[in-house]
Image (cartoon, rainbow, N blue to C red):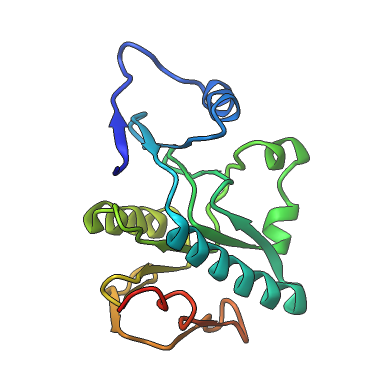
Length: 195
């Protein structure tokens, strides 16, 4: 099952608090909201997709524990982007001083901040174009580096603001470059389920 998009306006307009409550009251589902107020309902991923996501978060988390440069987030967290969209990347990282500058109340809900770094993993049911559009939206809203991992095709798309998308075929690892100094994502575990 792929994601479902529901147009709510003009019938219903969800405030930020109402959207947060909707997410809290339906924890078995993942919701996102577009800048136009459309509600996106995303089904849970399968076992392989969940394992890939966990592997990316583990590697990012281990690096961050050693580097102590920021905060790591999983796909269960959401961010209010500057354009008004509420998005939940599969993995995200925010530089520590930017995170700590947010008031505690904002950190407890969907923080009004674009992550510095995001990872999106294409699951078996995801269409590629909506994920690519989402990555472009991240760049337009202040994300500095994004990786779209496509295990089925064994491809990675690297997104950076103001630069053309770089496509890598069958890479074994990715470098966090100057944003995440010393971080290298080993793709062997993430791509291992595909032939």
